[in-house]
Image 1 (cartoon, rainbow, N blue to C red):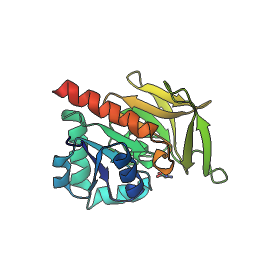
Image 2: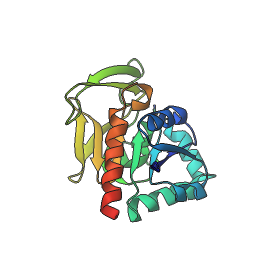
Image 3: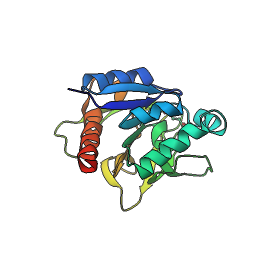
Image 4: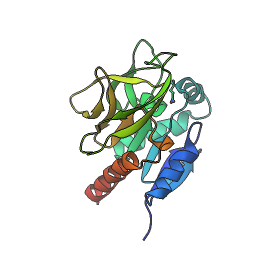
Amino acid sequence: MVKIKVGVLALQGDVAEHASMLSKIDLEPVPIKYIHELEGIEALIIPGGESTTINRLADFAAAELLDRIKEKALKERMPVYGTCMGSIMLAKSVEGSDQKTLCLMDITVRRNAYGPQKASFEADIAIRGEALPYPAVFIRAPQIISAGKDVEILARGENEIFMARQKNLLATTFHPELTEDTRVHEFFKGMIEEILVKEG
Ligand code: GLN
C-alpha cells in the first residue's frame, strides 16, 4: 500500500516529533523546506515554534513557500494542520497585533495567553467524539478567543478554544506531538482521507 505523504514544515519547531507521530499512524512524513517539495505531498503540518521567527522568515527566505502553502490550501483544498504557533499562522487575526499570518482560518488568537507563570503546563481536555480525556501539552500557548460560523469547535476551556476545524484546516493550541497519544494526528488523518475521497 502506498502511504499518504504528509509534509511537515521544517523551518523550525517540533519537526521530528510530528514526523514520528505520522509514521506511527502509517502516514509518510516529508520535511518541507523548499517550495518544490510541496508538490509531492497531500497534506501539511505547521509545527509549534516562535511565530515572530516565522514572520522574519516570511519577509525573506520563506515568503514564496508560505504563499504557495496558502494557495494550495485555498485552491487545491490541501489539508493543513497547525499546532500552537502553527495555529497562529492559520489565524485570520492576532489580537492586538498586525503580525503577518497565512490568514486561512476564521479565528482570532491571543498569543502567550497563559502568561509567564503558567507558560507551560499539561491538562486533560475533552475532545469532541472522544470517550477518554486527551493529555494536552501547552507551551507558551496561544488561545483561540473567537471563531466564525464556519469553524467547528472540537475542544474548549472556559473562555478559550483549544481545537478547531474549518473544512480542510485544523488548529490546536496544544502540542499533540509531545505525547504518546496519537488521537489528534489520527483525527487529521481522517480529515485527509475524507478530502482525498471527495476530490477523487
Ligand atoms: N509563544 C509562541 C508564539 O506566540 C508559540 C509557542 C509554541 O508554538 N509553542 O509564537
